[in-house]
Image (cartoon, rainbow, N blue to C red; front, side, top):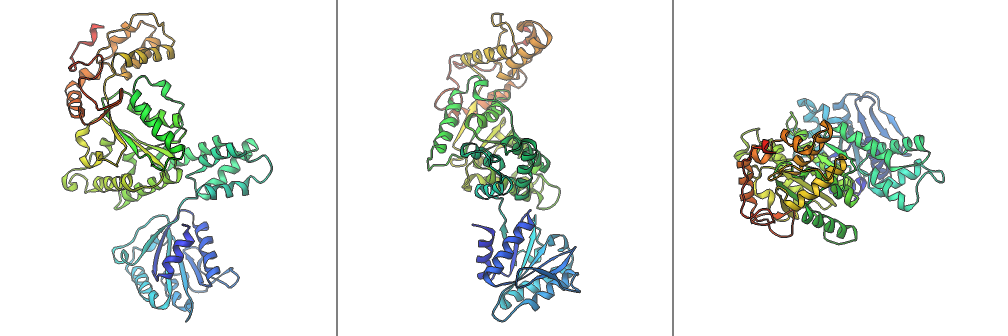
Length: 499
């Protein structure tokens, strides 16, 4: 439903106070003005720079003298009302002026009188910052980012010459690259692509979008070239994600939700998440929970909603949250540690995971399950909860071959004893052997496995995962006894210098 359609509903239902959250004020005003012309409603706009402007019968606006003051502009709304008509006053960026009691009272009086007089106060701002006196007086409307149909219209208006837009197969990639941009950002991106290449290409759009998301500080676009071929092991996990997302792409009515990965540090959880997007042809957004935290009251919740709106606009996509238990470390009974900010962020995230209807696939990783509340792992938040254990003998063989080839090492040389090693430690050994130009066995003397430094924590994590999580390496529930190298074994505190 468009902004104009939602606004029309609320006006007809006599909601006299309406807050439109939008970062594209000119486009929002165009929609509002078009709606008023079609319905025969009166329209006035006000901002601190130009004062009050009243739209004429032909849609043009003229400034009204003596109403540069915001309170005077609000009081002027009554003069716009007619016996059988409707009048709207749009106040741009008015959230900056709602700190004074006189302005708050003027808005409150105008909204209270509006139900009888059919006059409506519409505040147009990028954020919702309502004082407590007005919280129950206003309804909030989201001015959504453009969908792919609107993006296509923008692209055709910019790239109007033959050959500047690709044919349909390539056009899909262009629209996906532009998803999540505002209308103005999309216009700029298409224009930049035409200047650089004489045609619209996705790489320019991705470059611009990645920079804008990074500047926003909430999310980043991962553009690496990783794939499942770069990961040894995790075969059950790879098959599950590949199948569920392929079924969705083929038109399945069931929508995949995502997965939660628990496991030992260094076993490939983050690498898997980054490779998944390239493997299934979806953009990967990296969400930083810490960046959502704000110093002002309500800022954290607003940033969370903003990040999730961007994810919705870019769907189908993958959202990756690394080490989520650390980002939510402030959650304690009663929210005592940070005034409840983490608890409210967590609640917003839980609601989104449970209720969102867009094709956003969440992948979260965690190393310490004890810091995750039980409601986070319940059914229908995620499609599955996987445990990523230390790799077994077969998985380690794949990982050794992969990194020996990547770092151009002699495949016939003797390998160090790698019991209880993670994939990250195998990679580090190969990298150091290449960097120092020494054999693998000598390079291994520089590595202390995490299974040695954090053996007790790993054992607790395994005990918890047994019978509760799926195994990432082989189909079925994770078991301590599963696997060719794991018959009832525990982590041994071996001296790494034995290599």
